[in-house]
Image (cartoon, rainbow over all chains, first blue to last red; front, side, top):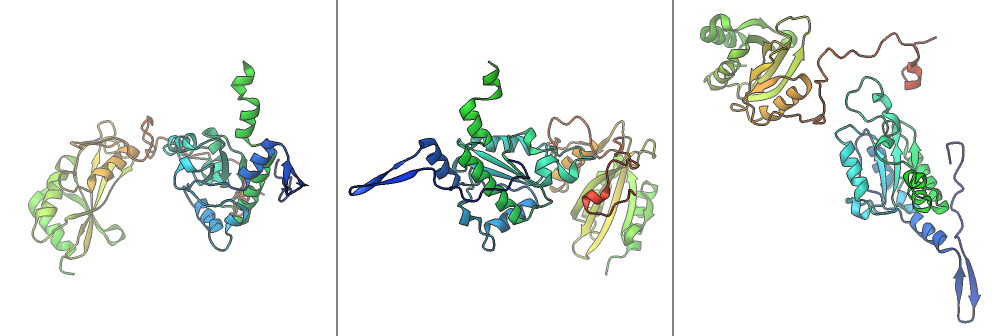
Length: 187
Length: 172
């Protein structure tokens, strides 16, 4: 999915409920049901390194309230989170800490690169001695949000896009699980 | 204000003679220089004197002047007299080839991190510092980024239009 595609909205539940005597049963692929459940309960990690984090906080608080879409509680520890929103500039000194946080998150895990700094270094692309030019040099990114900083609506769009990717099983982590890493395939 | 610039200047010249020089008041802040060997003596005098009482180190930083051959690196101390609310600036210069300056850590505990930062960005070697290592940049960095030997990008390049950055385009 790229910027030209619009999200499909809330995809239907991936299963059929059959009624039967005194109850019923449900038919569906287990993987799809699991993905559906996961996508509707994303727990982001509290992680913000600059002004994009202010927009992130705004998106989390009362006016925008992204809990409405199932992005639920923001966790203060990577061990309880499955989504990291890289909101802000990552400098060389921060990069090992970011990698460590990512590694500490339980699988499956997803990454959103929010804002110009996380995508490419942004305004610090030129004349810098300390800024990582794109967070995808450090960890694999599923959704990129352009903007400096992006508005909360853009973040919501990205989160809904991510939900859709999870339901379709097309995030990097799910793909790696299903098809193996590049190194695995080369062997 | 009870402590005047003239008093500070008089006390300094009485004590150090021609070892303090370069008196000036840029941006209305009294500024003077001393040889780098005397930086601790001057700071101690400013600290201990019953009238001067410059007992607070507001800031410590450095400046690189590549054109001042032999005195390329200047270390700047901003001092504050909290009783009379007077601020002064004190500078020492050093050769960039031997950037050794005595540490002010014994006198001001706050100098510890500020000297580490100054070392980090300018490579000033603070002699006697208890833990002189990089503080803001990565430990693996093998250069001092705020020295002027690092050129900025070519300002005449035309592949970058400011309009893309919301500042009004300069390229027609």
